[in-house]
Image 1 (cartoon, rainbow, N blue to C red):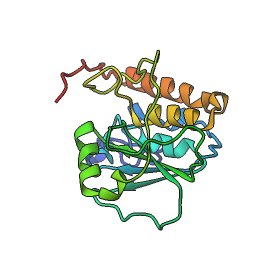
Image 2 (cartoon, rainbow, N blue to C red):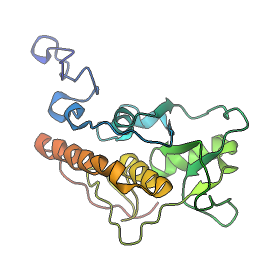
Image 3 (cartoon, rainbow, N blue to C red):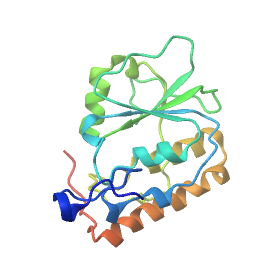
Length: 201
């Protein structure tokens, strides 16, 4: 990590030039490079861009084929691509069929409230077939931010599990499990307490 400011001279908290996090919580050392076959597009709500405990930027740094766009409104991609949206399934939504080819996986980065807002402001997302994670027997491992339910996952953990499920290749994404553990360890070293689970809003 490289400090971009001297807090003793300017009063500004020193931060890493790579991840833009405070030096005590820098996650650059957590990065492991993974050659994902399915490209990932992360649509990030603006409130997440500078959140010190957000994981979307870390996922982007780890994956060979991953883009991240920040904003509330996003233009739909050109027609013809086979896209899938990582989002809980509802009766009115199309479900991604097992084994169906996918040209890119879209992942929303934000709280559940912000994710719902992204869905509302970008109606084209609702028309995409949805990939819902099979979380049977899985307990969320990311404990650095508040959650409303035990099944709610960080963007890094959700993206990792989605790629494993899509490609039926858990071994390829095994390094991301270690990335998540190392990321949480940076928060422990920084002295950030684990938050309690919140009731659903």
